[in-house]
Each structure stands twice: as C-alpha cells, then as structure tokens.
Image 1 (cartoon, rainbow, N blue to C red):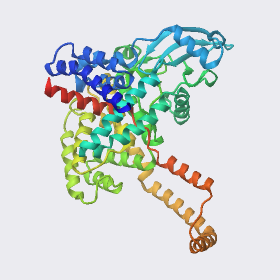
Image 2 (cartoon, rainbow, N blue to C red):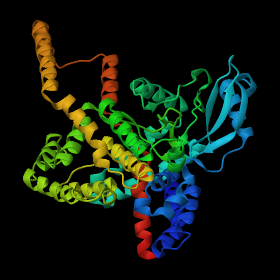
Image 3 (cartoon, rainbow, N blue to C red):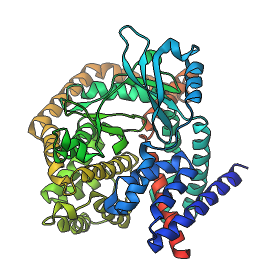
Image 4 (cartoon, rainbow, N blue to C red):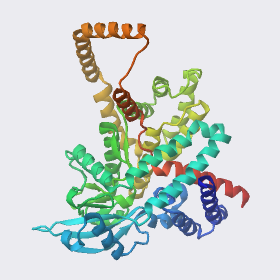
Length: 500
C-alpha cells in the first residue's frame, strides 16, 4: 500500500504542476501565481522549493520571483485558538501562566508560524513564539514517501540517477526532517550558532528561552529589524544595501569555512538588519555542517577559481577521490578552465554562481564524480544567498565579496604556520605512540593468541558500542530539503513542457 500511496502522491504532484508548466512554457502572465498555488497545495516540502525560486529573479524572472515571495513567510496562518491549545498541551499549563501577552500570528511559513508575545516574568521580556503547524509531521511523511518512491524508480532505470544517489539523499533527508520538526533541535542549533558567532560584531543570533521551549513550541528573544528584502527601507534607515549584501555573503562563508556550521535557510524572510546595523538571523531548522576536509576542499576550490589556478582545483578533486583516477588530471583541469575563464572580464551583473554551479555539475558528471551530500547543501545555500545579495545590489560581485574570506581561511589553515602546527601535532602523536608501544605489542601478542585458539571474541556490549560508533561516524551530514525537491520538481516541469 505504501508504494501505491507514493505513486498517487507523485501523480498528484504532476497533475498540479501541469497547469503552471504549460503557463511557464507559454509565458502566460499568471504563471507565477499558478505555480505558487500549486506548490502551496502540494504541501510544506514543495513550498521549500518555491522559497528558493523566490530568491532568484535573475533565473526565473522578476514577476515569477515576486509571485513566489509569499511562500517565504506569508502563508495563511492557522488559528490563534489552535496555537494557544498547542502551548497548553506542550507545557501543561494555560498560556496566561507563561505569557502576559500573546498576539496573533505575524508570519506563517511551511512548517510553523510565529507570534509576538511577552513573558510573565518580572520584568517581562518580549519574545517570538514559534509553533509547529498542526499535522505537519504527517504531511512531510507523505512527501518523503513519494520522494522515496521516485528515487527508487529513478535509480532502477537511470545510470545518471545512480550517480546522483537520490535514494541516499532521501534517506538523509528523512533524518534531517525528523530533526527539523522537533523545535528543541532547532533551539539547540540556534544556541550552538550563538556560541560560535558571539564574537562577531555584525552578526546576531537571538537567545533561546529554554523554559518555554518544547518539541512543538520554540520561544526566543524578539528581534526588531528590517527585512533584507526591503532595500529601500534599509537605505532609509541610513544603511547601504550594497554593504548589507556583502555582509550577508561574508557571514555565510565565514560560518561555513571557519566553523563548519552554517545557517542553511538564508532566504529573505529569515534575515533582518537590526537598529545597530547587525545582520540578525532567525529560523535555524536547517543547518549545514562541513568537516575539516570538506572545508579545505571548498576553500581551496574557491581560492583556485579566484586565482585562475585550475590545476590546483583539479588536484583537490583527485586528492579527495571525487574524480576516479582513470580520468586525466590535465583534461579535467582543462574542463575547469572552460568554466572559469568566461567569468573573468565580465561585469558582476553577468556572472551568476547558480549558472557556474550548473556548468560545474555538468562537467563533473562527464568525469563520473558522485554527488557529495555535504557540498550539495552548501551549494544550495550559496545559490539562495547570492539571490538575497542581488536583491540588495543588482551588480553584486560574489567573487569580490568571497575573496577576503576564502584567502584568509587558506592562509590560516593551509599556509606555513598551519603546516608547522600540523607538524607539531604529528610529533606529539608520534611521542604518544612511542609511549604506548609496549602496551600495543602486548595487545598484539594477546590478539595472536586468541586467533590461534579459534578466533577473536567480542562481548555483546562491546559489539553494540562499536556498531553505534560506526553509525555515528558514517551518518551523512544533513542535506537541505530543497535539494532533492528541486531536482525532482524541475525534472517534472521539464517533462511536462515536452508534452504540453
């Protein structure tokens, strides 16, 4: 029954998208509104796709982007009565015992909505109260079931799909959605990002009120600010929208490169400029992580393109075994040059990281590079951030904004001082090994004796611990929901355009 339900869900998606696909193909004036309504009817998972498209007027057109903007934080809210009932269920006490004031919903998105409130403390504190939509978990479960069915079908019938590993992406997605739909996990992510960035004078994360936070309710510090979608209001407040654009990009890259932990849902509805000119972020349901190796790969690749050192970029791909060794390194570097060189000499308005990534994906496909889950989320976020920045500055130059962050990271982590630091760590490790050598020899002798007597035996608890540790280490980094939805929905739209 699960497969049948998934098939019906997918066919329902195709049917709902058929009208917008025809309108897009015919360039009808209501295409954006029709697509927006279709995505809204499909549910929260597909709304995420619309949120990303809304940030890219340079790709989908200004009218289409404006029609999709309401999907970011202006969806129809559920009732205040339902919101109050959820708070009472979550904490076992009436709303009045927690909040002296509790207002109507101010912003409603695909997963939750936000209310402005004031705590019952003395003195009272202004807070934002985020509450999950009723039945949103069931809706996501249906969407994931449909996506899993499509992924299995695609891998069974397409070599290209097997290279992109949609089944692995959907499996990782299911785990990430489970985390996103528990607001305690979002609160923990906000707390971690706050600790990592509290020394940043131009970036702000709201404090979490843990006493008023549960799986379905999240309470945090209220932030007054101007949405980054409103460049005119930012300018009227005495801030330069062009400098704000640079701040958005550099904040994202600093989080990704320096900390390996970044806000991965940076659409305009989640970013504000406060009265001190700081960039304030909200909604930490989707966060990205990059391990040290991936950060080195990302920074080296970005720096290589900026320096037009395509061989360096190619060598990084081979060093990380992203490209199989049967392909010529020189030929791969030549293909990367074909991507990078057309960028230089063009105006910032004519250069798009989204198109660059599209060309890079096409090139790596020819060289049999498999999708890397950590990088997929990073690339998706970079595309959205670039869209935000271009909304503030149509001539935004992503390369100039990125250069100081990338070059500083490379100098700090791949330069002579970093090499000396790593050498010191290596010598320290060798010294520890020398100290432990007698015990290691003794352990090896014992192991040999066990093998001679009939094999190695593990206590059941030990085996369980080893399995748990292996699971923890091999668990893929969270992948953005929008990634698999974007691929699937764009495939549907392209297919529909052929038939309608």
